[in-house]
Image (cartoon, rainbow, N blue to C red; front, side):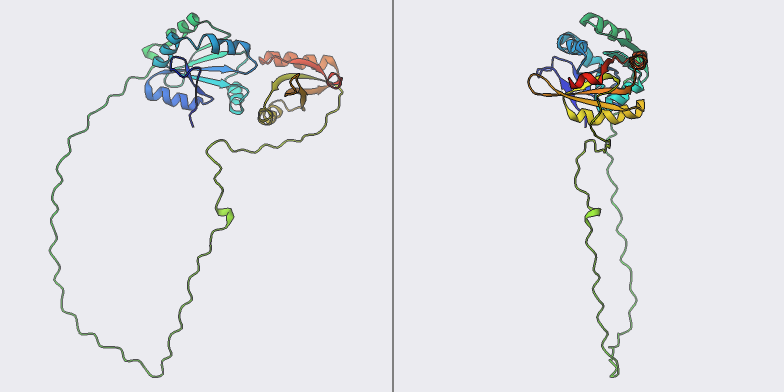
Length: 293
């Protein structure tokens, strides 16, 4: 299902396709437009600032609506994290511009103002990056249908008279055939209606973690559903222990902080932190003993 997001109900703000690059590509091809993807996250202040000050500009929104299909991908989303890895996103926000065929024609990182954003979009809005408008052929006028010829009725030859069957005295009445019973379908053949959204299973162990060693905190979530989505992906990608620290803020609302690894020394943790930095991931060095103070 295509989900759109706008910042105002009056239609003067930018309307984004949310977390669905294939759908945006299809729309761009159908409408002979370009499309661009804005990679964001809830923790990205610059992303929020652009949502509130740049993509709320009516002039920019009008230009985008006429020439582009805009997409916003949340890298904290289950699918968004996969797109982040696929397109090697290292900094937020990152904007990738595609032509109507889905080929990358531009890539930009960091926050942009209204004028700079429009200049970037105008730079790539060229006929060479768009498909040609389809030619609509008017339908041909309907032709009158020919009146079918009725076939002549067949001539039937006379049939001999039917002699009545005379039952034999030694014949026994035929036994009636048992009725055919069609078994009712079992519950296994009638799956419940699960809806049209994502339907997947995740499995990971949850156990108390000791307060020893060091790790690198890379994410923090309010929604535990995001934790369930992200932990299996992180564990598969980094192949190391994933620690989730649950802490209540001053309003007694929980934060779920995701920490990678369990290193015996600070030097080992710092080496991994530098590796993450090369991948564009900003992590915080954490001493697990501090979480129990």
